[in-house]
Image (tube, one colour):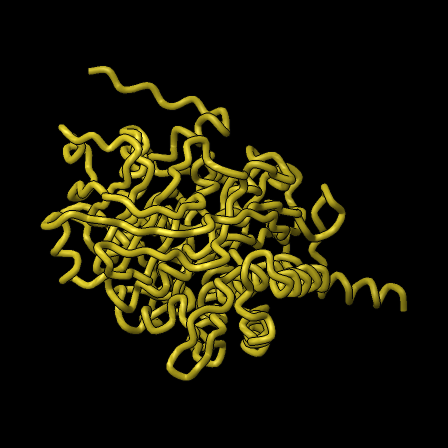
Amino acid sequence: MKNYILLAALAFTSVLSAQTDTEKAAETVSKSEIEGHIYFLADDVLKGRATGSPELKIAASYLANTLRSYGVKPNPVSGDYYQKVEMFRFYLNEKIDLSFNGINFPEVVAFDIDAIDSEEDAVYLNYGLEADYKGKDVKGKIIIVKAGTPDALELRPALGSRAPKRELAIKNGAKGLIEIGSFDQAIWPRFKHAFEERVSLSEGEKEPLPLYVWVQTSQEELDKLGAETLKIKIKSNGIQKAILQSQNVVGVLEGTDAKLKNEYVIYSAHYDHIGIGKPDAKGDSIYNGARDNAIGTTAVLTMAENLAKYPTKRSALFILFTGEEMGLLGSQYYVQNPILPLEQMIYCFNTDGGGYNNTTLATIAGLNRTTAKDKMIEGAKTFGLKALDIDEVAPEERLFDRSDNVSFAKVGIPAPTYSTGFDAFDDEINKYYHQAADEADSLDYDYLVKFYQGYILSGRSIANDPERPYWIKGDKYEAAANVLYGKVPEAPIKN
């Protein structure tokens, strides 16, 4: 009898080992299970999973216990499935009163503002670029400028000029900078909601600007700038500060190869969203974040379930980040405080996205930037999807540098972001991105089954490959990788 049991066990083990990675990737993805994860994470009871909220802690507990149920091991530093992250919250507890020449401007977003109650003449400086300061004395004065630059007037690209314009105002001794724009009415509320409060890993910047705000107005009012004296009246009790406690969720699985198990593939996603915001036409004010990023969070869970059952040669580190919506804070904190040496992390396979509009695709930020490209293409193709690099769709959006993957890329770890099918910023994306409409019942779960299967197969292929993935030669993050991994760059070929 004992021999029979042993033979049966050996036969079962042989069947498992005979399975291909494709079969393993397909087997563990259950439509009902992924629905269960997403419906919970995007439920109204979690109130949009805002960073630092009690509801985000509930989500963290759900994720931690799901990893536990799969057999994933906890954080080796803390002994549980959490990494505590302390942040600083900066917010206004009352509206800013702002007017120019007696006309009120209620739509204001503050990046910096100290307590102020002032009525004075302001200086108009066109776009507030370096050339605009020539011959102008702005020391101790408030500057009024048009938002963005002549080549970047729309809100998203205009944000790119924010840092240099702020630095110029500080350099020239201004006490305040006000940028005024006439932005898309559909986008402005999202922008305002995102910046109504700021969260940072540090208590403050070295060179704060006492007053830096953006103002939304009509094109008619914007066209008047510079044509008349600008008498400004502004009142605020300033930005308040509080400590915010949150957590990353982490887990570890050891690989099967005696040598390769010392190398890790990171599987990551952020699990926070933007909380409660402006009510939509139906009165719904909870921004549930099914697409952004319950989909990505569930991808990590599906990978964990698969690898717990069928481990790969390399080890796996699962990280679910807090604070992404506040500026990639959870991933930045992790890179600054890793639980395992960063040089042992050979790849970061991140998952994030604002939605999808093409269910024939898996869209990947950084697809063409690492040597694992073919594995992601083949992984998606195996389950009926085409892998597409996001830079082929919207290079101007710089999406590679706008998700948690970039925190790892900056220290040299090859790190793409695997996202649902996207081929344009169109109405289908804008309908759900950071909107109350982003509910669990609006998703195509048949598509998500294929998406997760392709993600798992891609990850398994990378984790089992004897050859380590790396940046494509000449990538801007290759130099950081050479430092992290102690790799000596190839000498240039002499003619």
